[in-house]
Image 1 (cartoon, one colour):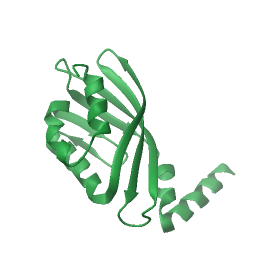
Image 2 (cartoon, one colour):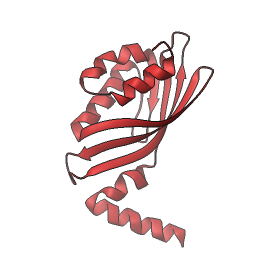
Image 3 (cartoon, rainbow, N blue to C red):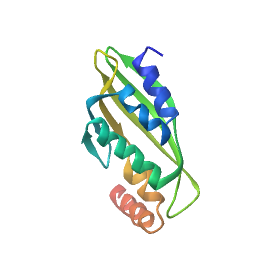
Image 4 (cartoon, helix red, strand yellow):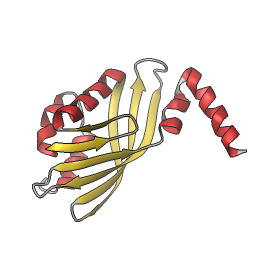
Length: 141
């Protein structure tokens, strides 16, 4: 797996608490990471975000559904499958995308996740979901 994009996809699709030790093989020391809830720099901070995900959910699994690469960049679309530890134990799925930049050594220096927290997460929560759906309907009028 010399291709950095292939290595990253394999890492994400096999992500587990145990595999977090492999982060330095995927991310540069000063890598930048941003998602709808976090913006951090450095492998230790990125490790903390992924580790926290496993605290919040069971059965976490990324399924990469498409990928595009050009030069030192890649764009992945994915489904994140999980079960909330709190609230509903029903299987959930979030659809999103990740934009990656790689350095000359093939390590990720830039990781930006794009997904709609309102639609993909908040609307699925018991009390907040009803409010979010109501706001969505009101915004369409």
